[in-house]
Structure formats: structure tokens, C-alpha cells
Length: 248
Image 1 (spheres, rainbow, N blue to C red):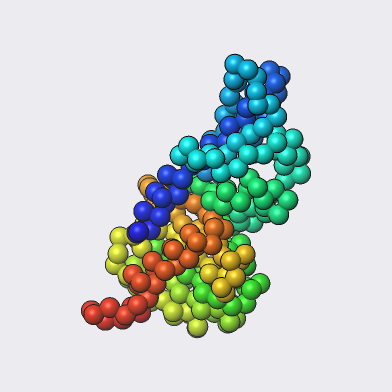
Image 2: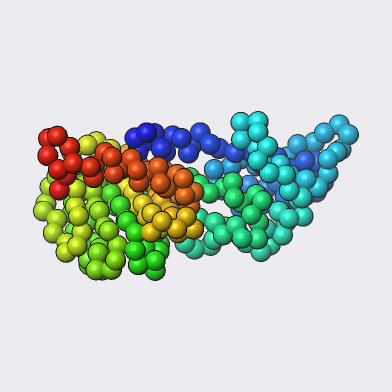
């Protein structure tokens, strides 16, 4: 898959959370809709003729049941959290049965500050781990130059740092391996991929494509298989030496 195909793959994995037979005065469906507003899930209520089952919600993907949980657990989730208010992804320790299936957060953003915040959280995670590989796409080299001090700090740790942008102004950051690539997907894509130094619990990725000037659609995810797949694609496409010469 190309970078844009990864985004379409995640878009196609939208799940449905069905709350069965909520009480007429219940706000649970609306509350869950708001709570999961950035997750790749649609929430809806369903009334059955028998009124059964009650107090149950079912998470589905393409007709397959992924999880069935008591609505009391969802109410507890709303009261106590689970989706991180700051940072990346979800903390599914206490609500594993349902949240384990919601590892991807999709977004449409014209707010670059929000995307910078997510990028910095992933970079900070790499600093905390102090190892592994970090792959970051900046579209234009001057955007990377603006982050020169930060990436110099990352490269000064035990992190294998690779950056990507279209050819342009020279990039010279100690310890950073920069790849100047003419590919359209490099020009359109903003990404930060961290392999967790091999630990699945630390793997994370942000990937977005520019749909219009300063308007992006994409996702961030803690799904280790998805993170690995994107990293493997970038390695094969841009890090592996090619017959026309190695990347820079």
C-alpha cells in the first residue's frame, strides 16, 4: 500500500457501536457519539420489538461482532475516561474489551497546531524510550529546518532518525538521515512513525495527506500491526538503496 492507501484502509475500517433499547430519556447514544467523535466509529441506538436485549451495546465491523459490553460499562467509561485527554491514542487498560478495537483515530484538520501537538507527543515518546526508529515526513525541507533543534535532540539520543521532504533547501542536522524525494506522496504527506524500539506498547503513528492547502485528512494509531506496516512500506520505498542510487 502507498501512504494514501493506508489512509483509505483505515477509513474503510469504520466500526458501528449499536446501543440496544436505550431508555426514551437516555442520552447515552448522544454522549457516546460526542465521546467517540474523533474515533473511527459510528454510534447509533436500536429499538427491538421485544425490548430485548437491554443494557447491552455491540461493536461491529462489516457485520462481524467485535465486542459486546454492558451499557453500564460504557457509562462508567464516559464518567472515568479511557480516551486520553492529551497525548496520542487510547488507554484501554480498564476498558480493554471495547477500546482494544478502536486503535485508530481519524481526523480532518485545518488546525496545524493540533497536528504539531500530536507529532510532538510521538517524538517525546521516542525520547522517553530512547531507542528505536523514528520516520518523519515534512513535505518541504524548510519545515524540517524550523524543527532543527528538536530533531538534533532526537538524533542525539539512541534513536535512528530518518526525515523526508521534497528536494529544496539543504538539510544538515547532526545524526539525522535525510531523504530528499521527488515522490508526490512525500510532497503531500505529513507523518511521524515510531517503531517503539520493538515494543508494541510504544508503537505509534500519525499519517495525513494534504487535501487542499493547509487542510489534512488522516489518522493516528497505536495499532502495532498498522504502525509496522507503514514503517515497512517507507523502508522498502525510500530507505532501501535503489538501482538509480541510494537515497540521501
